[in-house]
Image 1 (cartoon, helix red, strand yellow):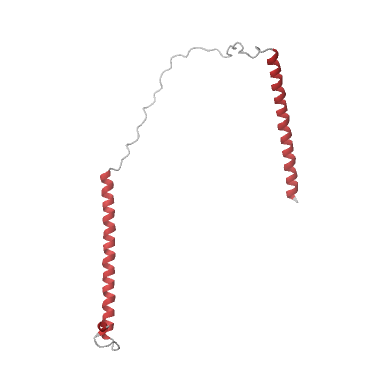
Image 2 (spheres, rainbow, N blue to C red; image 1 turned 45 degrees about the vertical axis):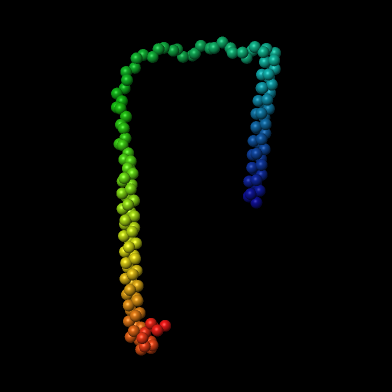
Length: 137
């Protein structure tokens, strides 16, 4: 039942917090009420009072020599891809893709021809096929 004791502790902490907040709020409300009552008795008591003298003496700044700071270094210019460069790159990629596709097409055709030739030779040399091959069908 450890959770029950933790729950009870949490409830106790929450109640203590609520009481401390309500006490502070009551103090704030009473302080505000006392300020209002003073303001009503003497309405000019909170009008801007005379400014106080600063605690620090003010003296003019003496001439300061500028520090030797090197000028800021400009970054190297960024190379912007010109449209013609992009166009050349796209064209080269398209050409490489087309060459790849043509190679696949040639390999497929060569494979088809080799398989077809083997099948034809088997059909032509098989004694079970009817005379004249399969052309009669």
